[in-house]
Image (cartoon, rainbow, N blue to C red):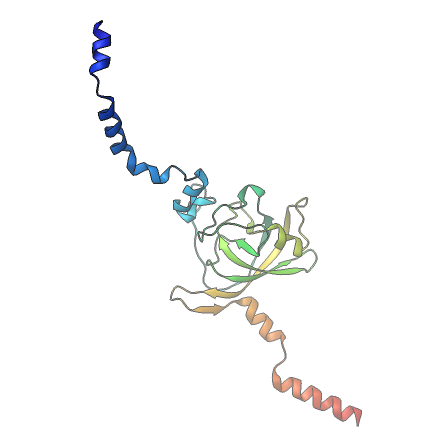
Length: 199
């Protein structure tokens, strides 16, 4: 018998198998995990897109209106994580802002046609100069912004703005709506006048 044959015969294969099983067994629970599942463990701020170098996120809790350009989310972001850690859905009323606190409810009005829609800020962006909000295709369509056009001038009017202490502050949009809405006394007075006019 050759030296190679004796060496192969003397090698302890069962011991090798047991050793490899001991080393690899902690990894077995991850064997069925898909690559996409690892996105859950990615920090939410970088899961969808991170600010380019030199761009700093400064959150504004004042609730003031902002005028600028609205754009539409790219389809490449469908299903990926937003800054709040939830998956982005193109058929939802979420939006991205560089400055509004996450959770802010805002009204976005297209200055070209006066159409508006209500969105909730759940993501960060857009990171292009002059742009103030990224809209889902659904929200964009509601203000007459098509994917062919791509961009539209808008005013973003916050309605409710989360504060650092956990409270919610009415934004400029809510104050405008309240001032435009007649109060109960005015409604009663108008009804009374109408009745007198009929008599």
